[in-house]
Length: 204
Image 1 (tube, one colour):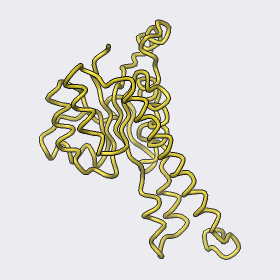
Image 2 (cartoon, rainbow, N blue to C red):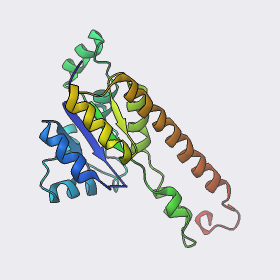
Image 3 (cartoon, one colour):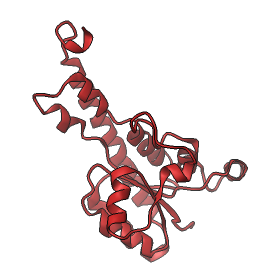
Image 4 (cartoon, rainbow, N blue to C red):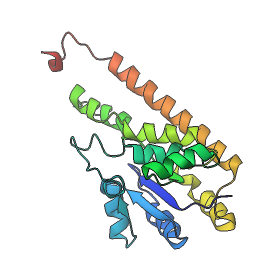
């Protein structure tokens, strides 16, 4: 079983991240992150590499493009038991990302504000987060994906025991991802359908 060597952590809900990330660091796992999540970990003395340094490409377009890069998704989606995938990773300088902890922009909380505009809502539709989550969940054979801080203790316990999580745990966590992204998209569709395009100033 391949040991977890690299984790990507990018969170809206940062509860419990200091303890989780510190234990990953103590286990020798490299941590990649972005924005406020990286800052919070650094403020707590945890060593973090910015995703922009990992990819060699800066965050841009007001943060709309941060993790949408082949070095991120190639590192997540590569099948580690597939010789052709491993060859392509080496050929293109890709490094495996073995653990992904991500949660999504708070769209539901944003649109619950009576003063929320269509523009506000659109900027709180997460793109990179669901993409990373779905990539990780699709490749649960090789990637541990976490969307719920309640799963931190079990993941840590399994890594400490064997260097990685069990396949059964990775599958269970992958199912949680697709449940989350399904609900997230349903919430977005429901809210957007409620917009009156004839009276909304966005369309004037």
